[in-house]
Length: 503
Image: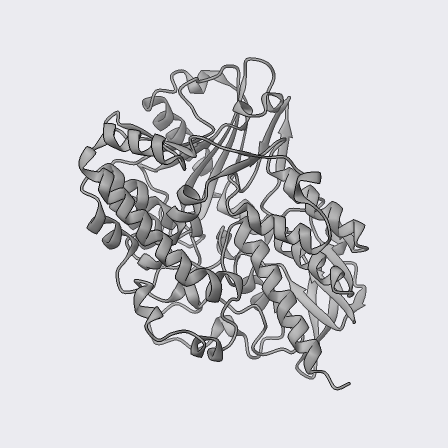
């Protein structure tokens, strides 16, 4: 067993460290920020607390299996509780629906909204379950890291994955009610894509959330990041935090990764290197210019590389009051969904009528705000960074903040502007700087083409030996469960490569 260096203490990097330490490797992690978790982080101001990234836990068996692999029990580290409703949806016309993983409650909600679509819902969920069953083994749990991996699949499987329709086309074929079409179109945004461009294969996501359920972690989702770090430490993993430990270069000699060079100019030798950094950022900034996978020649008129996912504009609001109409998770839909995504992905402008996500963790954890007050995490999908919009222009972020607050007031959060005690925001520029996210993208590359969901950058570098990728920008995708699964894939690849070494 050799020495492994991991760049980044995000959830994928820590999960990889745990698995590799269990396998007997010596593991060292270098993180330029001061805390673990990557985008899954926290913010505390004036008695208020917010999770700054992911806000819902799905696929809990993924985390349970990680801890079991280390001879531990997840419940000894965090307390996971179900969330019901999973999400409260509101539309501009006053319609509201509480989505639930309870068949009875979901059926009652659909009956009230549109009885004709109750049967359609069960048909759609059966379809979503079929997609999950087809994709879970080959794509979620194993990944695609070589063209030979495709040969392992039944040729008929590709057609059963519904790649030739978009998410929207498939959803619309099931539901009559436009509210439900918009609701299920929304799941494409879970990996930063447009439902009008992304393949219908992504319709596996409703089954993951509504079929398997959603959970919250007592104290906030950041407690899961703390649990990963604690377990890694118990297994002997060394984790270094701070700007001086940021990695500035992956050292490559004779086509092979042999270590990293830190911001403090120290060179750390390693037998293998794992990058828990955005793959595009890594290719552009940490590796030699030759053979960059992300920058193969393009046809004239085509932009270089793969399209990033959307980014986000985030508000952290500390209020002097509570709004009882809010659930733990809330979505306030735009009037024209197609126009919203046209602005995000084609015009690359922040939508003037955005769909707004609001998370109120204080409903489950009252200590996240002073008594009688509330902490709201507000997220709007916006374009990745481009010349089309400048977030650093004077007043740009403030103006967009004002637009979002006004929209929420129109949805019934009366007096929201006057209720603000504490507020901060994150723009795509902040996401790019803080997490080295390529062009501020939250989820790495988008899935806005037919097979892009399965053609993400591989977990093993195609051009440099002993270099691997873990995290949301590689297989199998973004989100805490998939990032955690990417660590399992990488650990498996390293075990394969170790077995190939001469005795």
